[in-house]
Image 1 (spheres, rainbow, N blue to C red):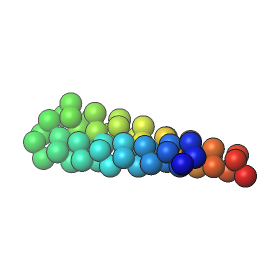
Image 2: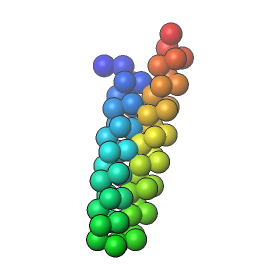
Image 3: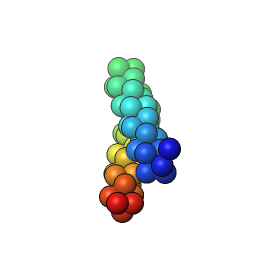
Image 4: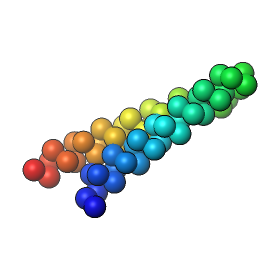
Amino acid sequence: MKASTKEQGKGKMHELKGQVKETAGKGTRNVSMEQEGRGEKITGKVEKNVGKAEKKLEK
């Protein structure tokens, strides 16, 4: 598997994990968990976009 595909996969997983944490934080009114989830979701989006950019550069 190419590095760009792995990067995109990791990004999607971080994004999903962050979304779950954010939702759980909202549900339990845990601001810290909600913020942590947002941060992880943003990290996932960045990783996913890095993977897309690498994929374009490979061509």
